[in-house]
Image 1 (tube, helix red, strand yellow):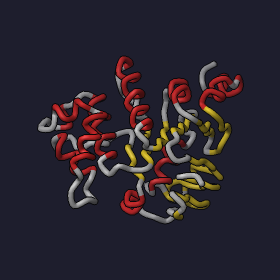
Image 2 (tube, one colour; image 1 turned 180 degrees about the vertical axis):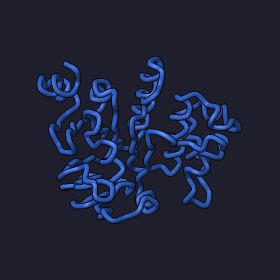
Image 3 (tube, rainbow, N blue to C red; image 1 turned 135 degrees about the horizontal axis):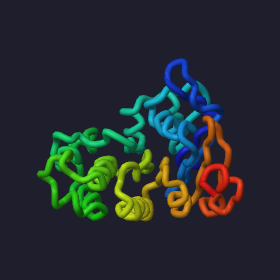
Image 4 (cartoon, rainbow, N blue to C red; image 1 turned 30 degrees about the horizontal axis):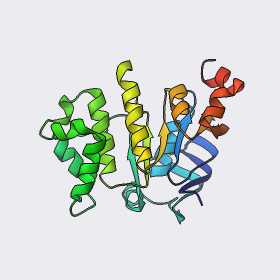
Length: 234
């Protein structure tokens, strides 16, 4: 059984439908990437899974539980965390305060969980008293992921984690995501840097105009001539 199973998902915002009959799944421990052109519905798919977009049809199952109608605060409780593309930290709060908010549903975050976040993102431990808004873009992204990992989720949703980063920081960010996955957290990621994302992930989905177009191992999609020509710039 898949950890996450999205079946025939229709979703959008109010009367606007963005996704049409979308299927996707993530197995336990798997690293899956969604790519496609701008406006394809990639971010809407992530938001719909997490309860931030309107689910207009279909079903979403997580760890065997139907979560189709759950609100985001309830989705967090079943073992899923989400890092949006923008506005994903509280800039006026310190690194420490942001991390505490990441684990807000717990009475107290276990120390070993905090330490696991610091092991993955050592810069955060060195900047606990620094306001998040004064961090670099790459450090803010690490903080956003660190806060999302404070609950030790089974599945981490990442929406465009490399967006806005300096080119020399993109590889480092991907390395950090690889490490999170290798430590046992399943990943579902939307990413604009499609070639690098497909190179690193286990499987990928290509969305276009709100519909599934291609699915397969990341390496197979990279080698597919039609995918390369239509969606990866040749």
